[in-house]
Image (cartoon, rainbow, N blue to C red; front, side, top):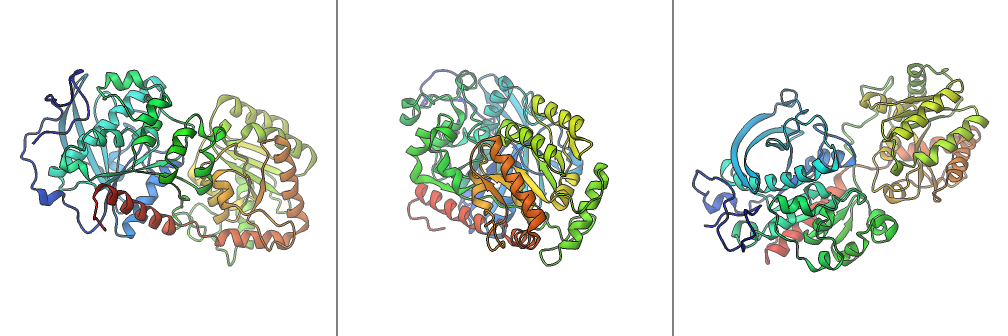
Length: 529
């Protein structure tokens, strides 16, 4: 039986022998890799809570597989084995080692594993790509080749798992460009029966990040030319996200609104034409949150726990505790605006800062920001404290989960004036903790926050504006302040409605399960799950 290839050693035609993996054990019997009663899905991603987190992808990969397992899906996760992950803290143990021969030499791949939240999770390390890393991402010139290698390692490790662990996926769930080469590599191995029926689903978390101009790195790694007509016609054969979109069986985005937005130039970032070509396979599924772990009724970080039935007094206590921690006057009558965010352009920080200056110059309000990001925005936050620290402006230029929870549970208004937001988790967490979100009408923010009716609060869970203008942020903040002072009963009705909104993974996980079944059925005609 021919071995699968995930790289090539020369420019030879694919029918010539290619050495890929050193296998020193017999191939497993066919029964081991046959379809079991459960759908077997392997998530491949660059991030996952709690092991490695930069953006929202980590929250999804860290919680969706557990929800799928509750539905009977055998979901598992494979991640790079970053050097900063503390194996002892998570009970991570060495599983096996194998040799992987690629164009630049032979790597010893170490595979580690643990079970977190009931989900089997695997980590792959190979020098020099993964194992000594201090951060998830570094420079483009290093990230592109190392994640290309990660895709190859995932394929090779999965092949090894057939015999080593007696497990083989029915579908891959890949996430953004970092694992987007896997559907192409599978396509190159369809001649093998074991790969012929494996399906693929791509989740687009943020189309702005694409892994583009990767052609030289792909050639160096021994990856065959991508000759998909849609890629060649649009000159996208060297774009990792484009490759993922072209070769995946099913495409998903992390909110329904974002699935529409990326079909147009403003949000498509050059890939809108390719997305429209796949529109029949494109599905927008709203992200969920882990409502068991993220629960104000049990959150240890809060000064007072509460639920939607008894939040008024407890939230006042939490607000006072937050003010005390920030060195602010403990005043229940002053609106407290909160921001927990990466300080980057996407999050609309350039729109927010001028609006905050105007608001703090005119109104008696307090403001706290938590997060890090681009140097110019961090500098703006420092200057805001210099100019309006006396009024009540605080900027904590770091990230801390406990402080974030206190801001969700103690602030009155949560700010998310994003230029674009594929889904967003902050507004959902704020609503669950009773802080009313103030958001721009885009992506997942539009899907999750219902605009206040400017009356008795019969409708609404927050304050929504449309224009990408600082004036829009300013006037919406004024609207929130005036509502806070003059319509307290409407405010509390919105708080209660926001806290009662269901942001669990239950519905979305079922949608993903249905899509896995559809994708597998395409690859295996007659398969009914």
